[in-house]
Length: 231
Ligand SMILES: [Zn+2]
Figure (cartoon, rainbow, N blue to C red):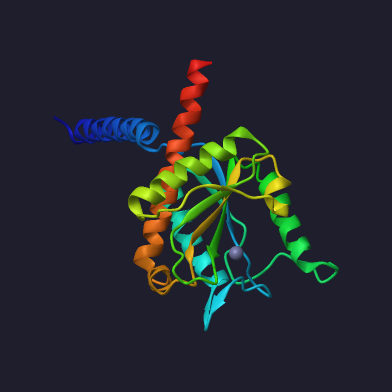
């Protein structure tokens, strides 16, 4: 066999292998990435001038951002297209806003809408005067039927993976009653509870929360698709 012939054979073998590899990777992607083509806006609560709830130097806004970053990673690993409303310690109010908090929330709403999000996830931390209160919970506005489905799907994961004994609740807060895009408000735990405060400041537990939320979102998307087939 001549040198050129050998080279050509090697090249064709290389190209066939490459083709098969690309082909299989695509099949794997389609089957193992349940959130492919799903656009998700992650909304880390508070930021900048607004620290949210706090305990000594532990600020809600910082924990929200840490958990959101882990969530961004987990959702992306599952094929979702994600948008983070903030990646650093900042708020979205303008110096010209007479009501800073309202301006901040209004811009968050606009981003959710402009991203053409399939859903959004607002990440927060709870606080209550009774320090015995603990557990992650999900709040939703009944502006559409999908919100309750999303809330239930995530809450189920909180019950199983995080051993939360809380339940879904309705909320009428400004942000959640002013968008028709499906989404929920997630309270990851109570900063007022010493045990949960300790856990939430650890990256391992933050990842656990992120994984639980992601699993809940996957369940929600599967349920939606199932309904589509029935119709
Ligand atoms: Zn908050």
